[in-house]
Length: 99
Image 1: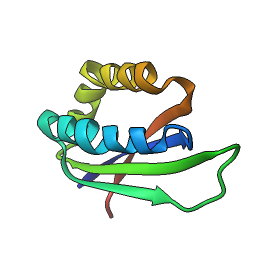
Image 2: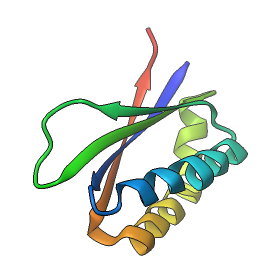
Image 3: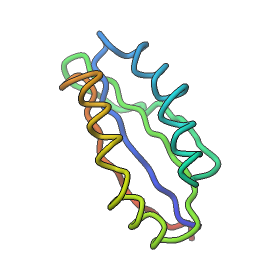
Image 4: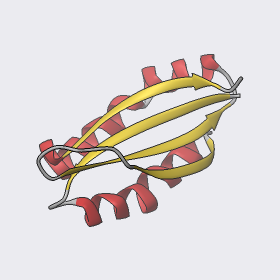
């Protein structure tokens, strides 16, 4: 199984609003796109200047599925997050394979 992880670094001034967006918009939209088994996690490591880190993980059927999704859809998600939260919610994605 392939795991698609998006890490969010969220400023405390928008944390509640951003987590609500993740739970009510981001996760359901990703499921609609074909990802399954979402898991929202708080990352407990030191963060800087009022930022806290979270991760959202999904299973994906194949690497090709993720590659196609990244080409067709990822920019829409990134732009929406940037539009809603500006520099107060930063993201990056990782693709992992369960061993």
